[in-house]
Figure 1 (cartoon, helix red, strand yellow):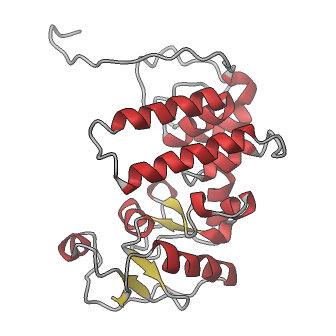
Figure 2 (cartoon, one colour):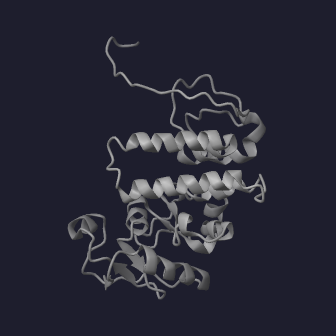
Figure 3 (tube, rainbow, N blue to C red):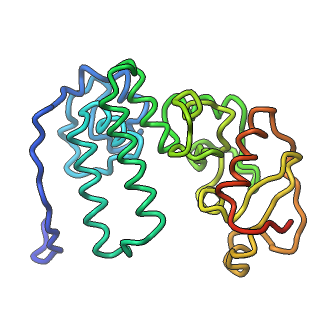
Length: 249
């Protein structure tokens, strides 16, 4: 039974000219449908028994990619609204804007096959073919040992925005499977890895937070070797992402 009280949520709606029919794109959308409370049936028809449900990031990215530049611009606008609570000079916000610009360029590039564009954009969030290719090389988080796919993020060693080609963005050797907290540390440059697998910890990381995340700052750790391709991408990560002078764990 509906209660008499609730929460008011202000919503801004944006009509899209380039609408799509999900049932015509289930090859792209199907892999991202959640097992429970999915907004769509496997055929692409709406699931009427579900009133409100969560749209997983992978499914949202696939839909935005299929709709095209309008949806990409809408996400960019949403990021700008976030500046009301995130400092405008936040590095994370600047990176998000940079990546949105790149996504728009990819959408508009006539030389990129239409079927390839969604995969390139999905790779930005560690989804699609990129995740599949990383999973052929990596099978667990290097730090925690967690090997359940639902708890792992496919993280770029050479960031998506810095890749010199779309081949690099989709290269499985340009990725590691990490749990969310480790992905955060790696993505922001608080940790990195030597080619031989030795863990590196930035001197600017908050040591107590690192300890609570399961990485004792004073403990030496080796996570195992990497492929030749991974070593090449990790070299970029150490030089361009890893924060300041390096110290070994």
